[in-house]
Length: 98
Image (cartoon, rainbow, N blue to C red; front, side, top):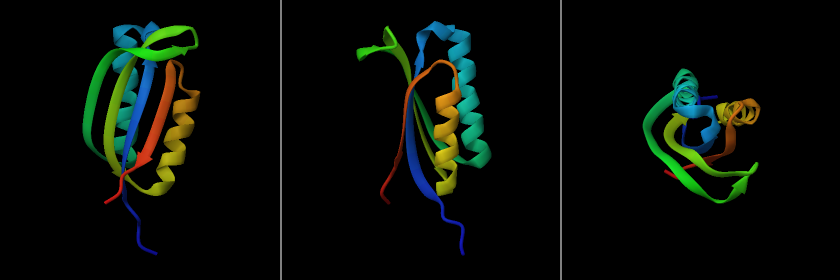
């Protein structure tokens, strides 16, 4: 069976309580993780934005969008890591249509 490679985009919102260094380190961690399992096509750091509604009593978060390609199995692992990483308020992984 050939290796299937799909295009994805992921957005994650980090807690601003991590501080600038913590945010930078966490964004880098996810960039490195994705690069290890696929190809990072672009990283767009939107920065601090006010949240539409409070999440865990926080009014703002640090948004990052990453476009990447990888095997479909990796997205489940990425989602699992988002869920166990301190400071990740929300995350979303979307498969892009070709």
